[in-house]
Length: 208
Image (cartoon, rainbow, N blue to C red; front, side):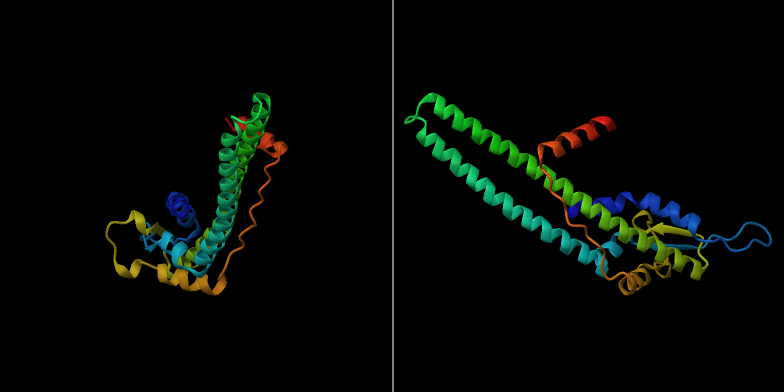
């Protein structure tokens, strides 16, 4: 999950550049084209090192660990049931064994479905919190660009060489820490009912 969070930050780079290019006001033109004034922001660093970013990761990890603990306990119970059923196989009628095996199979399917639903719920909550933080980073960067008279903002990951003074990442993080020390991380809603699963499947089918 942490890796996906980092990858998601990288994939927003193009959108970030486009939004800030148009958000940053260009100096009034007098004669000829306005000079290009560039600033650089390390978006991933801002997400990773800011108080809001650290809070987001901490909240996500808390839910992830809780889910993992629950899943490990359920997995162990299913494994114990499977081993017990294997020991009973020679001692009980075939129809009774088949009935128990079918019931255990249904439990395994339900466990797998719940695991998938929990993963999707955690990803959705992470995306909501990440969007809130990204919006704050975008607004603060646009504000700094306006103050510095910059009309182009580039993500640091896309720049090979640059003048160190062009990097405003520390300023972005400092203001982000003051204004948005944390972000709202929605509680992941794990609804693994058959109706919910059918609705989710229908939604995915409709998107194809």
